Length: 89
Image 1: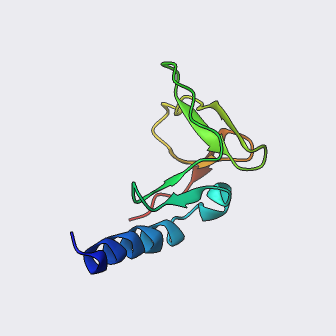
Image 2: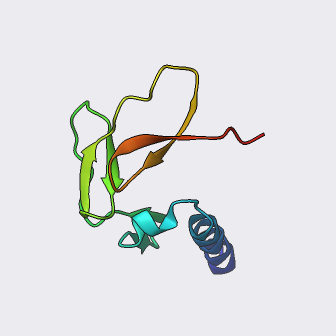
Image 3: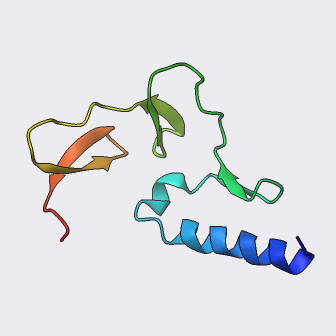
C-alpha cells in the first residue's frame, strides 16, 4: 500500500469510530496507526466469559446475558445492563 492508501484507510476507520452510537463510552481508547484500529487502555481479559468496556469505571465488566423475552434492548454501558428500546425499522 502507498502512504496515501494507508492514510485513507486510517481516516476511514477514524470516521467510522467517530460515528459509533456509544462513542463516549470509548473515549479513552487510542488509535493504533500500525494496526489501523482503536485499542483499549487495558487489554481485554483472555478468559471465555464475554466482557464489555465500561467507560465510567475504565474497566472490563462481564457482559450481561441478553434478555430472551422478544423485546428490543440496547446496552447501557454505565450500568452494564440491558435497557428496553423501541425497535428501529
